[in-house]
Image (cartoon, rainbow, N blue to C red; front, side, top):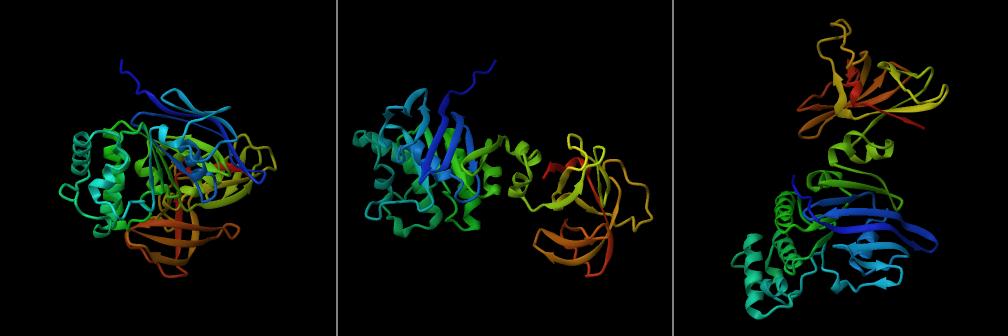
Length: 360
């Protein structure tokens, strides 16, 4: 039987208010060594405030924070930030311009000179900056500066790494490589990571667990696959991708749609419901034309739509349709190049197991 990794960070019922408004409300998290948890949510939902409380630069109004089981914030107790063994990485890198790369990396180390040189050399090797120690930050590219910031944050071997939008200042060409190498190093160091981001793609790429925040609360938490494929509500589904919404009324646990009746159990007769479909789960049935073989139960009933517009986005094409059914409008995503002219009539089908039903 494998031994579970030790619990590095435990946050319980954290609360922070400003001007009588709760910015963070009853927030709880647990992160083990080597685990990456992403706090994902829109700007202003309380992500960065949560990070500052864990770092110790912001005082919580209520709740507890424990590092390796030791209480660092709670009723009557507040351990100073420099005594928490927490690493910090931010968007602006925050390198000292008057210090060399080696001096920046070794700045927070409280060890003798020989040990400092060994640790700095080890980390510069790991971030692929061997030979850069004597350079100054202004002579480095954005990606190189971010790797220096990572090495400096890792130098004192923090138990927990707090990262606030650390890659948003990099261009797309650099971002993926720096992000992947950062994740590798944090895993190697068995550091518990709490990453704040508003980008779903970044959370899906990096996280072992996503904690989706809204209005100061965690509304859903789980593995990226589960959060994406089983959203708790329409807003959660929409945060990860564009969505189509078909509105209807539940009658006898069924709701009429352009694709036939949908099962809507648990919704009372007369209750308004919304059926959510991602564009990639709408399929254009090129063989049907209204005359092909009967659809499978998973695909449901085909529905006729008229193209309103289409546009090519590089890897995919998006096609907007006006459906024959009650003027519904839907968008389908098609891999590659597909640009039908406005007015073209096509048939659409869906996988019912890829749809979500929510009450209004």
